[in-house]
Amino acid sequence: MTHPSPLGLQRRSLLTASAALGAASLLPGLAAAQPQGGAKKFAGVTLNVSTFSATYPKLLQQWLPEFEALTGAKVNFDAPSFPVYNQRVDLELSTRGAAYDVVNVTFIYSSRWINSGWLTPLDDYIRNPNLTAADFDIDDFLPGARAPETGKDGRLYGVPWTAEALLTASSRFDLVEKAGLAFPDTTDDLVKVLRAVHKKERVAGFVADNHYGWTFVPYLHAFGGDVFRKAPDDLFPTLDTPEAIAAGEYYANLLREFGPDGAITYQPDQVTQALKLGRVNFTDAGQLHLAQLGDAATSKTLKTVRFGQVPKGPAGRFPGTAVHGLGIPAGSKQKEAAWAFIQWALSKQTTRRAVAAGYGSPARRSDIDSAEFRRKQVINGSDLAKLSLDAIELASKTGHMKYRTVSVYPQIDQQLNKAIELIASGQLSAKQAFQQAQANAIAELKRAGQKL
Image (cartoon, rainbow, N blue to C red; front, side, top):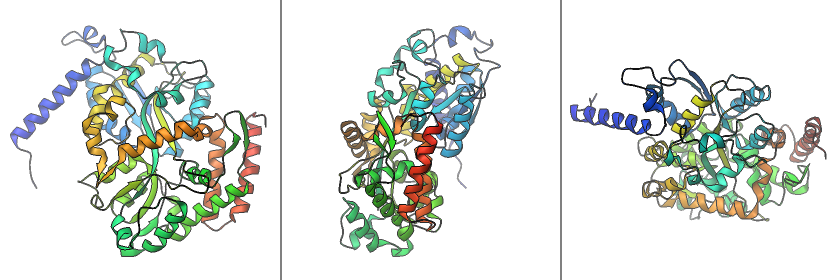
C-alpha cells in the first residue's frame, strides 16, 4: 500500500483551500454576512437536492463539503436512477410540495414542469448583484441549452449542466478492424458489423440504455417514422405507422440478436461499465457517458474505442440531443439558499473543475472551447467534442428534437419503453407492440386533456 508524500498532502490542502477561497467569490454577500468567527449566512438551513444519477451530480456530491463549509448549509443530495427520479419529482412538483429545494429539470419534462408553474423563475435572482456574482455569466451557457429551460413567458427556469448528444461507440473497434470492416455509417452497415463481431472474444455485439424513449428514437426517425404527426403543433401520436413498426423491429432485433444476457434491463451506468470493461462492443449513448471510456484509470478499452454519429437510415441521420438543468421548485421554502447552491454548482470555477476531472458534456461555451476540454475529448483518435457539436448543430437545423420538449412527451416515452421491451423479449411482434403503444398513447393523451 502506498501513502501520499507530505508534499502531496500539502499540495492537496492548498488546492482545497484555494477551491474554498474561489467558492467564496462566487456567492455575493456571504463574506459580509460572515464576520470572522461569526455565524454563516445559511447556518441552520437544510437543502434537499435531487437529480438523477449521472457523472456531473456525482462530482457535485464529492465537492459538497466545500459548499457546506462556505455557507453553513447542510445539503441532502440524492441521485436515484433516471426513471425513479422523474416519477418522484413529477409527483412532488405537481402537488407544489416543499420536499425539494433544488431539482434537475429533466428534458422530457421541461415543458410540463415549467409551463405548469411548478418551478421558480430565476431571472430576478440572476439580475440581483447581491445574490449573483458578476462573472456567473448566464450568456456563457449555450443558447440551445437555455432554450428548453425557458418558459413560454420568456423567463429562465433552469440553468443547464449538460448539453448532450447521442452518439455511437464501439469499445472494441479492433475486432471490427480485424473483420476488415469500417465504422458503421448506416443502419445496414451496423447489422453487417454486428454479425461479424458478436461474441468474438466473448464480447457481446450491442446494448443500450433501456430508456428507449431516448435511445430508440434516432432509429425511428432514421426509418422515416416520428413520435407525433407534427410537433409541437399537432401532437397526434404516430407510433403505428409502417415506418415506426419497421424501426421497432430493427432496433429490438439489435438487442435480441446481439445483446448480452439481460440486455433490456441495462441502465446508463451499466452500459458505460460494460463498455469500459469490454464486455459489450457497440452502443448509442450520450457523450457524458461515452467520455468515461477515455479514463485511463478505469477503462480497459481506452486503446480500442472508436466513436461516430448514430447511423443514418432510409430517411437520413437524426442524432438525439438532450439538455438538463438545475431549478428551484415553486414550493421550496429555501429559495435563496437553493439559488446559492445552483450558482455554486454551475459557476465557471465549478464547471471548469468538472471538465478537469473528465466531465464530458458541459453546457458552458467557455468550457467547450477550452483547450483542456478539447484535449480530453480526443479519445484514441476520435474527437468526441466535435462529434457532439456536429450532432447538436444537425439537430438544431432539422428540428427533429421538438417532439421531446412538449408537455405530453413523457406519456409517449413510457409507451416506447414498453414497446421495445415487449418486442425484444419476444412477448409481442413489432406490429402488435406498436399498435398497442399507439392505442395507449392516445388514451393517455386524452386523459391528460390533450386535444387530438
